[in-house]
Length: 498
Image (cartoon, rainbow, N blue to C red):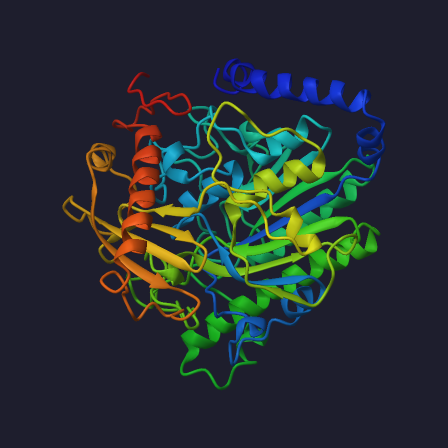
């Protein structure tokens, strides 16, 4: 029932907006002419736990990433690109919906068989683009439900993907010869090869078939690399004799193997002669994992670069990640841009470039950043915001405005990281408040070594008030999850109804 009955109710206002937009275009010749221009394809590539400093073009002294280095040279390398959360499931929810993941209740990573899922009341990029004739595909890590490939919860196909070749969480038993992929609802079984190459293979097969239709597309490629359990081709491991041990060489090779897969995808775009009008967005779901944070994490040698923290922290390294955009038809090559952007910006940007209306019945936290392609800073209605209740360290929320970031501690007992979302967590989140604040100037202090809360009282007061207001807004909207029976919720309203 969730895939059909709920669909009309949530898409009705969007369809109405599209009809109004179509009527407006018909009576305005200039807009009609613009609408006839080829709409871009979108290739979104997301890595898993890739650190800010893990690519050669972001300063890593050893890791070889020639394809991504070339991609950066062909487009824009962003120095201040952010995921929507410092943890995987949450950041993926934010990317697809353009909304702070707390609004949708994806408060943390989702363990297998967990009640939490991205509900059909949320509207995603592929759903919106499909309304305008786009073909859509997801390949790789999904991690937006606990009951994967089950009618009990929405699957990738219920969120707008025509084709999906996915896993619930990590490739298992490792990146090598995984056994847990599902293609459009049918388990695939054991596969030969490494996960990133298998994911690239599927994406390229889909591109070959999709090009027969000539329709624009949204292709969402989610590599498992370099998340644990790390496994890499021996010939790439041997390229890193300078590594301090075999585990570190495995990690370096893992990033290089992912880079190879990216290169193959880009070659396919060239082969199909669609590279010029394909906007490629490359990034990571969050910062790098801490070495040996858990038992199986012996190969987590990711680098935060000059940033403070790691994955799961609300300091910069938890969310600031590599970010590259290439679009030859419009984006001038060889740029490095320090304007802050976030994965939250993908939904409004893709919709604007495709001529699709964004939902008006819910808050969006991202901004249309297409003006950056013409050298104009985007108009961001609200500052960038992050919330993670299980973060390592005391700050549980952060807000960036210009060069400044404020972080807020909360008044609840710390619940610790690594447990996924548990019964009772929603109630703890709902009754929490921010009580103490830190303030940093990122332009002068990228490593966040100097808390300026006492030195800048006026700025602290204004930014902490903004942070509290935003925090209370998103906390109020987030649903309460109870047991293994997920609640229903409507935008901007909390309910415990089933």
